[in-house]
Length: 581
Image 1 (tube, one colour):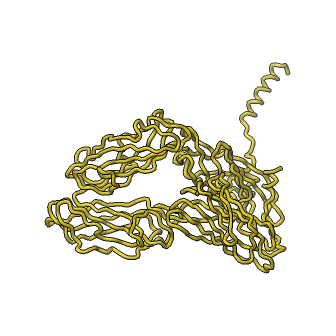
Image 2 (cartoon, one colour; image 1 turned 30 degrees about the horizontal axis):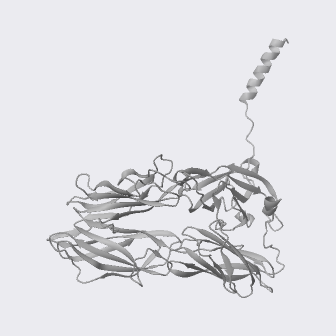
Image 3 (cartoon, helix red, strand yellow; image 1 turned 180 degrees about the horizontal axis):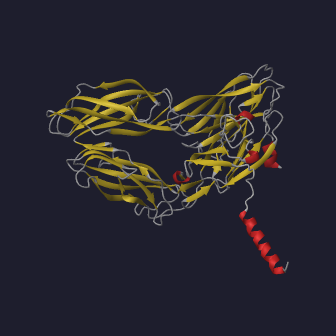
């Protein structure tokens, strides 16, 4: 065989090898899905936000019987940090925490994340194939809009079914940059319709004028110049809305003023943009406006927000929210508190409207329960020619459900008879009522009896009605507290002190309360109860004082296992070695 023939055979063999594919190999893999998706994850700089990452085990081949027992999430260290309020999912424990890294470990093999059924598995199918991890982030502040990413997510796999004596790891896999979000430098803090005297309104007579007032704040670390609305004037196109019958291009809006002028804002400063809008005499319906704001170079913007809904007609209903006890305006309520919805009527027809009945509905189910109403203030009619009846009808509701920080509202209308024909108001609405609350997260949730120097931490996110100024933790009988405790609030503020005997009272120094959406972690060093024969639950009451409605209490539970229990106070020292070796 000559060299040319040998060379030809070599090339042919190489070509055949290129066409041959090796059989699929086993692989430890997982999927990670962010919610909200990156395109929708827009946040104000400096705010505290929760991003959810759902983990599914997609291991294949010879690894498809392995389960995920540990997840670590890391941030890139650019300034955005994990809040201590980041809590583990059910049946998992947070085993390691820092500003840029948090690790969770499952409590048992049965709750570890298995692969989905199928794929030729030779092992029993687990009940759990995905788990959602809620990561609470304190967003950083920088000079302009910026997109950030999660640095990585690492899954640890095991075939070890007995966690009592530690966990044998089979392997790991890391996903780099598995999620992202955008930080906005500017924030619209209010977008309100007002009358021409700048009083907020939710309904006006047809043929009259109103104003649109946009208030914004510069959350960035740089001065932002030439701020305008985009679009200008604001639009009623989605996510805004316009319903009913309108003449021509009504309402017609034009820029009235900015404050300051020109609209340049230093870091932390606020300003306003005001438009004046006119309606036609035959208009009847509702409008909601949408816009965002941006600086002159369009590299510092806000999220797009919507205004309140304005009703326009000759006969209108106006809703307002009151404290049922004081009859004063209020828009945030805690569980078991009562609120009053008051409806007023305005009639600009040249004839009276009689026999008026009203309807009202909550916008979100499961938060409020009707206590009383509708209660009409007699007579149930209204005179002609620009008459206002306030209040005309009232309802009382109690907060009986929902979750802390959840927003809700009400919609309603009124119908009567005028000049021999039915007359109905456009649908009136009141929005952005907050179901306030606090859900303290205690860690660890299980300790052993007769332990000294046991650190227990309570993490709190402020979903209440005002700034938190004090946190008090009542230590139950059996536990002993010697006065040792510490707090970290707003990501890195350690100025809160602790005092008292029982409850242990954490108090801010006068300059650093926890703002709405802010968070804090409060720790006590305790001696756990001795002489426990069986696992026993102990209740720690967490009292929270805020500067709007006062004091509220929430209960947390810690389980104490008998002294000598095979379970440790922390069953996962591995992450410590990883962090500090």
